Amino acid sequence: IQDWSGEIVYVNPPYGKETGGWVKKAYDESLQGAVVVCLIPARTDTSYWHDYIFGKASDIRFLRGRLKFNDGKQAAPFPSAVVVYNGKDR
Image (cartoon, rainbow, N blue to C red):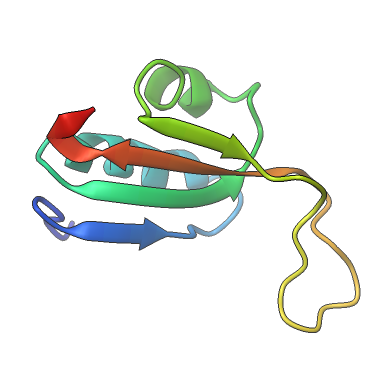
């Protein structure tokens, strides 16, 4: 519910059903001038990718390989992407 307008925000949301809500928030806040960088699963088959990323994000970067956090023994079971919204300057 926090207002991000005019801010620069990095988002690494919980992976799962909540991800789409965070992506929608990032897109909506970018329309109010926020610059938002999201690290999310590259699940391009989901509705939030089609509704709030494709054709709306300023930049999409697909990461090579699978992410591994800290000293974790296994990598993520899915590919990841960095999605950028450049606020009103899209």
